[in-house]
Length: 244
Image (cartoon, rainbow, N blue to C red):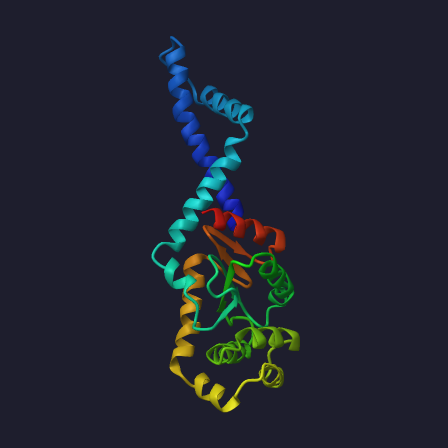
């Protein structure tokens, strides 16, 4: 059973419990009976929910916001603080979209154009990219080269070139680095720095705490989104984050 189904069941359970408490109280107050049976109570609760179905999506939305806030508690500032230079869009943007990505991820590759369109439509958008190399043996090497590119101020160039090159391999990583114009001597020294491995390890831990099991995954305001959710859904989340 997926997490959404669990959320639905949880909300229904909460609604039933709350509804039962409220309605049973009303039931006993309105009746002169001192005894009732379970079937009668369940019938009242069921009828209430059927008469007021709007409480279910409202309850689900509130529960999801609460769960998201709990997941982000204590790590939000860290997650939103990029590895130096690993930013797309406006580095000083007032609205932040965080993307967890892997260069071996087909859906991440498909999302590149959507993110570019969102950046073009939102001049105040800062996209913090967190490298999450979990899909292929070469993903980590590509991610480290991306961070080395960030250190040279050429993150966006490498990011786009790497996705355009195809699946990560020694050949495609080298081609993307060349296309981005990296100083390879400098890049190789950066790649050997232990802080890059520490950054990737930290991103894996962030993803675990946030419940992200794959890429792409996104954070915008209090919205946690998994998968290729599409430009429109991301745009909605960005706008909600802008409004606070």
